[in-house]
Length: 329
Image 1 (spheres, helix red, strand yellow):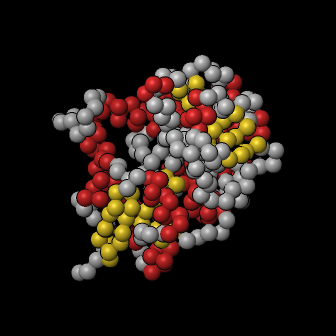
Image 2: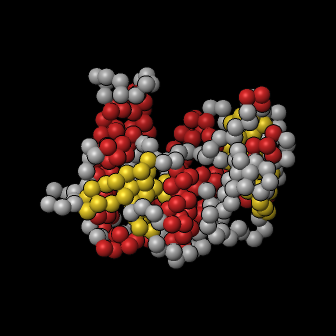
Image 3: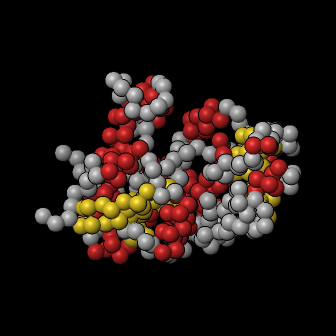
């Protein structure tokens, strides 16, 4: 029987590897994969929709959907998740030494609609209790000048936000012109100044664990999207792809948990998996809507409050009906 040939663009993840290699094959689908860095995938997906299936920024996808742009169809498959208290960088000798010091300071971000920044600002506003209007926000490239917003955002009234097109956020931080940087990609100050920029939280894993225990938010950074034209022609692919991504993820978690041999060049991996399961439950990296409802609702609330989303979305609006339930036998 012939299979439907679809193109796929995704970053290099172990939990997607078996799909890329062909070890896991979605029912009725032949994948033609491209493994690229996420910035390139996001840009080409947002502007040109080059692939049938691709990885996408969760913030940008949510923003587009809230504005009525439905060229992309989301799948509740989340290849990248990361807590973001670890993404707050400051000068070692700067004016920000504690979280509460952020009030009244100047903070650099790569884009207002960057997913990591949305979660970070949500944490600042809701967990630290610092209104976003009490911080001056500066947008720019982290290590290279010239980065721009990719989607239309409505920065809330009373919030100071300006672009800095001529200099990188790293250079601004080193020169004391901003007090902190919130970024998924770390600042790179160069070897001669490498020790001048540090994370605000040196023991960030403890801070992030406490955040999860308090909020049950496990931040979703990226999702998988389909080109709408492809989806509308073959709606059955959504469910088949979701099943295949789940299988590839299960294979990856098995490799992590295997005590017979080391699949990764890092000691104590099975122990780390057990520790994560004690915190998150048996499925430490859940796909689907319901297991992620708390995180999805929090993120959409943050996005709406911050003007990234132009209206308050419900999680069900992000994904097709074919992916919102599972068959039980």
